[in-house]
Image (cartoon, rainbow, N blue to C red; front, side):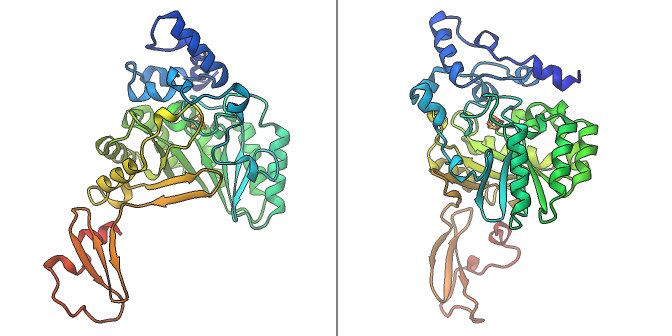
Length: 377
Ligand code: SF4
């Protein structure tokens, strides 16, 4: 058994395995009720990173009674599908929402079970993704020449054993119109020993492969995680990070700035910052939308554009992602556009008439390549 497999089999999966929870039996009984619906998994590597109750890692994986605040009955709760994915599944476990790309689920297992997960209805519940659903998914892609991009997701595709993963990648690469394969995974940040040299050697045979990783807090970036990301990057896999905005975990500018700086140092480009989805049992994690805009405003211009993720809402009901930006355009007309920069100063930028505006402008009003506004663009 490899080290990562041992870490996975040593996971906390029961209330009595959890770190830093109250001893009171009544509390534990209620947590048992929570975990019957939303299972627990914290692999032993991630458990070791948790330092105390309520720290940013603890909050992401240890259940609390707050999960019962917006709880329905068990049957209703497990039907909740905040992004309406089930409606966009032409075959089981394949989501075809956007014209040229699909999401293919490879399993229902994750290295940790995040308490805020959008797919709570599936994760940790066995028997949903099977060899047969995978076969149907791959066949669907091969029958649809408009699909040029597949995102392998789940669950976590990197928990699939190497041989099986290679079989799937090989089958996908036989589809001539499929250009890009993406892997959506939280493994590098939560079970980094899984990123073995053998796995990377196998993956690089199936390029172009991209990986969308998932990081929420700078404490997740340990030396082991750095090694894992370096291995993937050295295998030629471009790395991006998706972050979920979570109350009490990362909902302030300084934490987010530290996170994006650490990500860039390990060759991961901050890609999306998600407003938390409306999944049952997760209301206590949700922030206002203004909080996300405030964070983007606090990053823009204060760090390089490479470190500023897109802030998006994945619209409830399946409308797809919508990007949100702080208000930077104050006014626009045929002649000019008036914008506000990261310091709150206003600038006038002439429309392409070839002429400068007639009225005199403040010193900082014309944008030149050395202006911060140009850097932000
Ligand atoms: S790793 Fe992703 S899919 Fe798995 S439980 Fe966490 S958020 Fe959900």
